Length: 422
Image (cartoon, rainbow, N blue to C red; front, side):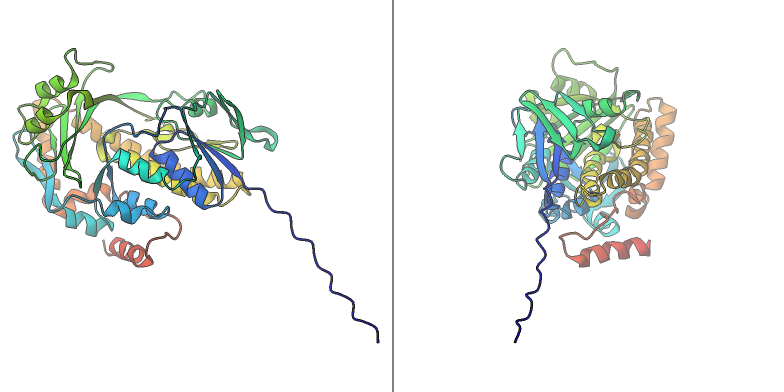
């Protein structure tokens, strides 16, 4: 009896090479993108010119849209656990009068999560810890970027240690982005908003407890916010000429400008370490880019859409960028379509927020007595109830990522239910 022929076996398909992404810059947006791409199977290298991964700045306000984005990389619950705002808060005049009141529960109910103030270093450390050992190269500046436009060739990043070829380059190199200039050399770049900001973190116990607030004066603003560990994060802004600096130090400048404002403003300034008061002129990309990508290179965060901090959305939008980019790039196949989809998703949303933040900055910049009186009256009217005071953030803080997150689906449904009910 003849034996049956053995079934033919197909040779295994060759393994698809692991796609490589190089992220230029280790800020919050760059690290979020790196972690999200790593989750998708990309081999990620983060290039940071500084000698260590450090957070530039003091505190950051993470709104619910930021938490929802961080759910995608498994960090959302950790960040929500750091929420320190409990009870009332709102907006005040320099004399202490309340212009608008809201509370933490109203914000959490409206947008599906709390507002969380954290130190930037906390978020940077937790993001970096989710990358493989050696993925972040410090002291490694990207000196040039070839976006890889012609003929499907790879993008190339040049560093002092040599060149790196990549399927994808992510320009997360901040407001003065060299990557942006390489992609869009004819764009005018950032413009001065007219405001300078100061930021400081003071030790726990330095001032008595207070209701979180933002205080608006004539051409100036002050905010005081508690952190989970008892420290206080404070920020200020004022209309000043670009490049101006105080001859006797920025702590002295804060005392001159804000020392007679309501409690606890002066106490916070007096508790500040003079060497830890940060001052920066605020520039923004008020003219939007034509796209956020070219060739194999893409921009995110301040490199793509730097905005005034008046809505506290700069960091949140960079985090959104990172997870939306990874959503459209599950691998390197269909790269151009994925990058085009990323630009189409992110450009309209961020342009709207850049312009809205600039409009609020113009309100902060009002200095005439009649203009300030009209502005404050409008704020009192808008702040009649907690829900009214939060309407500015409708469509912004309630954003959800375009994919299922690692967090429980029940919370996603709850957020969508809140949106449907409004």
